[in-house]
Length: 126
Image (cartoon, rainbow, N blue to C red; front, side, top):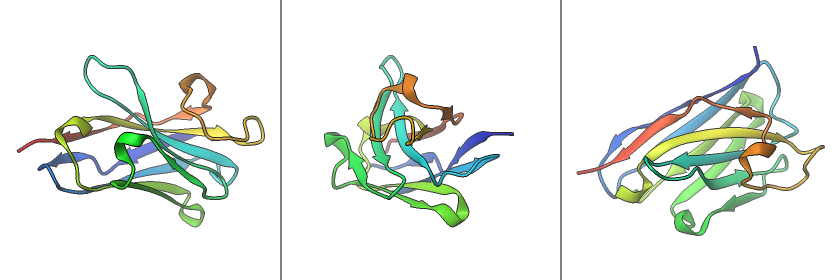
């Protein structure tokens, strides 16, 4: 069964850290760009970070310097390290896979992604 499974979310105080994982089953991530999106209540889904198949990383301005995306193809997993968390980072975080033979660049257009995870909740609150 082809799927992406996120984990690592939770409740954390402002300034704290979390590491999210996105594990693929049923297919290999080697040729996919992986993006993390997030959606807060009442807001549109927002692209947060993207990593290409050759590990070039991109970040939206609001998380630059605080979040780090990485991938371990041997484990078929992508990670998003969240640091210096703020209450406005509270959202459900989703990972999504985009095959780079079809679209060779990172983007944050949800409709162009092939697979999605079910999401993991991140809550930043004191």
